[in-house]
Length: 220
Ligand code: 4FV
Image (cartoon, rainbow, N blue to C red; front, side, top):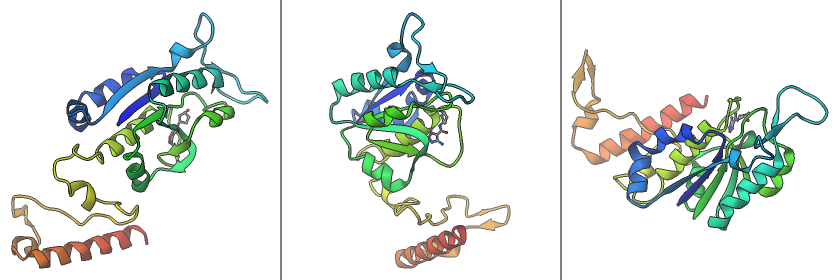
């Protein structure tokens, strides 16, 4: 999977891609990350990428021309990639969407800045995605959320094959059961007996029951 990220702040991603699972995914050749600086596609000597909104209003918008050029540049090296625009106005991001994205050959992720985008950028993208109903200063953190949640689903990236299957939100709703590790007792807090019983059927039943209970509580 090739991720191409169009951003005004590529340096924000260096730390994220240099550590943990994302680094391992690159090292294993399971994922590639290319940072594309939107500024390189800016207009005129000052490489302008933003302008004030028609009709008035506070703040600035990202101009459509630089965005279109940057998207075309990314597509040139991966014509089958899906183009995703990060915006609060997008479709609410869920685990099922992460799973869908993990089957793509490539993703081109466009990070917003300022007050948002010229609406005409919609002609050059495949999908708008929001990580939640709140407003951030940029689309870089949402892009990191998307990259992390998708990369971990790519076969071979995580250790145990099941670890990506059992987890929370596999169906966008169900929360994973509670988990414990050593010691058996900590400050009077004991690990549930069933988990120490060695009875796998009883453990599975307890876990399923706990998962249903927690999911119900969270959604009540
Ligand atoms: C956002 C979100 C988000 C809005 C203005 C960037 C900011 C600035 N992106 N999910 N929530 N973006 O808040 O994806 O352009």
